[in-house]
Image 1 (cartoon, rainbow, N blue to C red):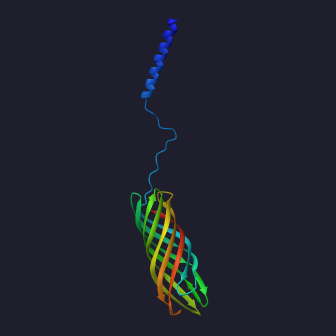
Image 2: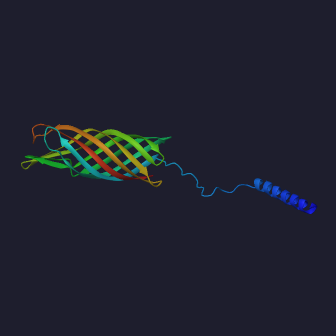
Image 3: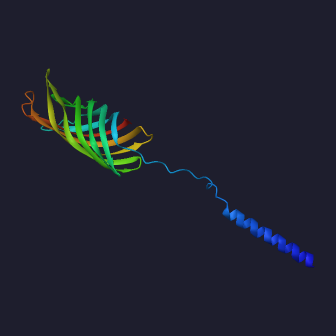
Length: 205
């Protein structure tokens, strides 16, 4: 009986000692632990390509030119916390045209120079943009043609997603008003107002 009690006491003492040693040992890494992903950096310069669809209307004329548009853009961002701001310029070629007898109007090219400002949620950027717009409005009628370069304004909204440290993709809507100029062929002032929905890709330096 005394031997049994003594054996039980020794076993309990060893168990308590082992538990204390185990408690003092350093803990290993938590299973399935992964380091947090670093925040996406929007600051710096970038260049890219875009393509989309343009649809609009000519003032003082019933034509509504529409068609595909595409080109390139470049810009620079600054970032302060989640606030991102900067500037962007782009130049586009467009197939937008429409005919209402005897006139055919088209917008062969246009460009913009805009400020951008937005809010970043890591690699997702929501932004607004506004600035200068310029482009060509061309009219053809009865074998005569005339084109004017018009200057106006543009504004819009967009979302850009960074999918690697150097590459991002965006979707953007712009409203553009090129103002108006006097055309000899039509005898009145004609301008062009249009909407543009486009997708693009940027490389960040």
